[in-house]
Length: 97
Image: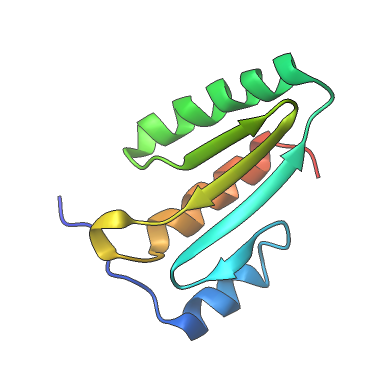
């Protein structure tokens, strides 16, 4: 299945207006979220992992005690695609904030 193309900086900026927890640009979008504790953060990673696996599109995840740092970029397109934006929406549905 062909992957979607890289989005323009303007398209990413427009999409980020509807994703207020995310920042970044055409090279990648990022979100950080603080959870109540380490176990909560690990559980969030597991939930995100199931969604990402179902989409066959995987975030970069950095866990620091109870804070998750997420980065979305389509490496095959060298930038943000519609897949990243859809995954961001689905992640937002799983996380507080």
